[in-house]
Image 1 (tube, rainbow, N blue to C red):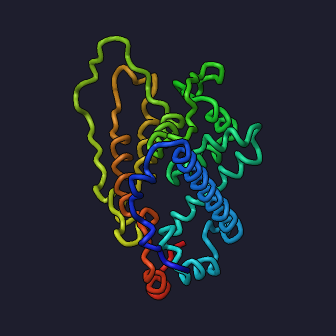
Image 2 (image 1 turned 135 degrees about the horizontal axis):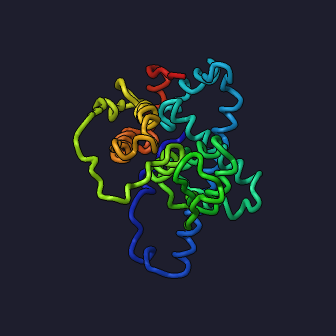
Image 3 (image 1 turned 45 degrees about the vertical axis):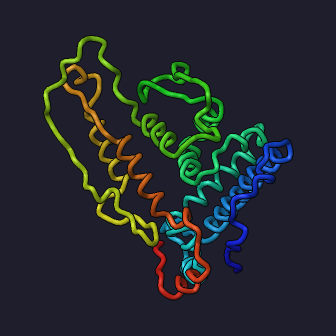
Length: 283
């Protein structure tokens, strides 16, 4: 595979940067091509995953792992868990293109970032009806038991080109575990009671491969919070209040993960050969 032609990466001259209809059309074409290329990459990744993922063990086959290692694909995708996110994005693109009433309209609504689109793929996997609503609105509910006709829907839709991973992930968390209603009277629940702290290793990532390291991952934090929240409901709402910093932790996690993601770095020409000899791939 040919390396990057560094001579092509220069800021264009003043004459080529002059605002005009042609310049506007060139920019639009670049955006359309970028979206098309990424969507095709997502779909290809999804097809590979479907073929080489063992559904019983939820692990990739040895054939896939050897291929991934031999050709240095970790320089592009990062770890295989990150490759799985690309595949999840492909599931969304495929569903919107083949199962929705207006594929052309809704494909344009999809964000192109891997993080945001992968979070959207979790919504699709969770509930296709909710996914369809999210193409039209941003929907919220006060409790898990709240009837559908009482849900609050507003514009713009949750699934839109500007949707970020943090926004979609935060929405999903609140949808799965709605926060308790605020007290109308003066809140007297101000006395400190319990403090739960998590390990700073939540933010640890391998600087070379982008793989998650350390004893704690974000999914574990979310899981523990859900477990704690189960003990707080209307029966003890007046006595106790639970507060959390999950939004801030999630934002910090995403920033540090993306900073160490090889997919966000320009791969070097020589790194492919070196990777094929030295790097190992985890399932």
